[in-house]
Image (tube, rainbow, N blue to C red):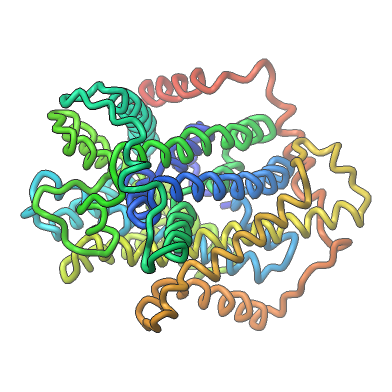
Length: 524
């Protein structure tokens, strides 16, 4: 089986909608729940500034990866680009890093489900919820392969519905549309304040509050990596992938910047439940996990909190479902390229069974909640995973700088490329410096005072990455490519020919989504 024919049954189930998958991938659990930690630590002002700045940085990185991916929409995305254009050891390192990031996200989602369920009852058996999620992910991803696309269509649609519901909720209630007829507006920006003091008093505390909000943004704001990884499956890669990368800019503004604004409007950062979750403490019985549901309860709104909580659960479950699928494919791809045991390439009915068997072991980490409360486990997993995402973005910037230099040395006019990133190579340098700063700094609290546990929670991935890089480099004798050695042609002619084989105008986004659903329904 060739690398670009991986798991055809799964590809047929999701072949589709690169933009829908990109939207679903960018709206994660963190946007609805973990964003509350940034608010509790930094206040609404710091949260908005941090999310805006970080969104601009990721926009710069998106600008880099878009230019490379539209030119070479290969399976494996930015991982293969790093190995092909920079150093095979870099591709090995970031491939495993991305796999661990996705795999660790699965128990995070399950833990978040338990946190959300606590709003209704605090006596729901944690182990039963964990076991049920693992069983359902197994059924959808292993036993019912063709159901994956249908399930993800509806679950991703639910995410989009949820975010717009919460935006409208914020606007309506802030102008007085609530049971108390209280037009509270931006009250919580004044009382208690827009900028919270975190860990220390005064200006130092406010700066640390901003940093905490920035770390929250680093975990929450994602998107380019998912488009890059799914680019090879698009029917018209040059057209569809380019459009997906372009629309990510308004997604950043709509989902993340506006989302941070809404959270800072509806609930004060001093709320006891938010503070309890921030510090990994048990909440009061019946307390909500999402800042939005907390706000609804504070406004004495009935009915809507239960609906939003239910939608939150579907959103979280959708994220776990997608991550199980993606992590399995990532590990399978590593095995196909000889970067993981060959045994993991074995498939059955279109499913890489052994790769799936490895992936489904990670959700069992959610059982850590049996000895710790859900909020504590959630914060632990967030610390581990934030570094994984940062390393991915750092590698994208390194790869682009190599690509940019290769274009200069080989005399390739970037103006002739199917997508030309703006402001280069400055955007790549901005992304590189920003990612390095956040990657090294976000666990600074482990040093003052020294805390061994906090250190390994925040810096494990930073320690593992160089071990993977230099270990593979030593084992395989890989070398850093010079700009003149970079293969800029690679798969471009084949992609051009494939793109030219399509005739007629391309369907619009909503036409494509509806058509995808109708096609799946007809096959049932």
